[in-house]
Image (tube, rainbow, N blue to C red; front, side, top):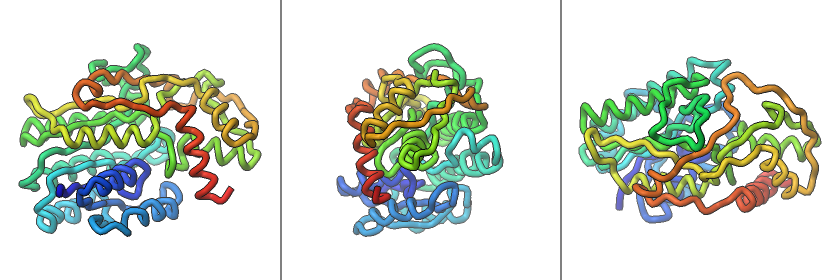
Amino acid sequence: MRTIVVTGAAGFIGSNVAGALLARGDAVIGLDNLNDYYDVTLKDARLARLTSQQNFTFRKLDVSDRDGVLALAGSFPQIDGVVHLAAQAGVRHSLTDPYVYVTSNVMGQVVMMELGRRLKNLRHFVYASSSSVYGGNTKMPFSVDDPVEQPNSLYAATKRTDELIGHTYAHLYKIPATGLRFFTVYGPWGRPDMAAFIFTRQIIAGEPIKVFNRGEMWRDFTFVDDIVSGVVRALDRPATGTPPHKVYNLGNHKSEKLTDFIALIEQSLQRKAKVELEPMQPGDVPATYADIEASRRDLGFEPTTPIAVGIPKFIDWYKDYYGV
């Protein structure tokens, strides 16, 4: 049995990754600070699905808390894997509260990698990056070989910083580390600040939905089960090389127009949306599209869920959870 630390264990991706690891027989130590960036009752509900399982241990802990995090090395010396997913998310929120992004995303990465230094049995440190690091790149699809030095938001800048920190710790301390650039993840137990959730709530309420860049928006929407598969596959394949640090895209490898995404939500709800076309928001980008050739080659990553399948699954969960 392996023992894996999963940060952001009450989060959207983190709770699903923790569940997948438990299902295959691993022991999981989940960390989360349960902050109120969005509905804490949703985080509690995700967490409740994990705390009922025998091999799950939870610590309410902020990843930027040096003393609390580093103490885990003494309490759980058997830890052999880290999946660091905790972060302050959201491009638009970074415009209004920049400080929390530096604390959570940058300091949190340093503290977690310092934990990695103290874990004598550590085999691999996997951490979340983001497609946001590609900024305003116009070359499609986005490749891990593309330059990523011109972020469009502070959130993107912090995630790129995480990659540089991962590289540095791999170089200095030979910690095998892999960064995963997630592309617009959606699905059951998702985040209320993301498009699928926002549009569904507003359509049900009969409220207008805002579609930015006057509808000329494309996203590589990736179903959460595919992301979880990619994370677990990465965890099981420690980075090699000099230094032992890799970065991969995890996306659906298909850029979908946002209006088509909305049409599938309308179809699943059997309701029409009231659409308000708005200009582009500061910090946003018009399109994302993942080149996943390296992920396929090295991780065996292969997304299998198109939005025509994933959106109805999300809507079914939403109706059940909220009693719609």
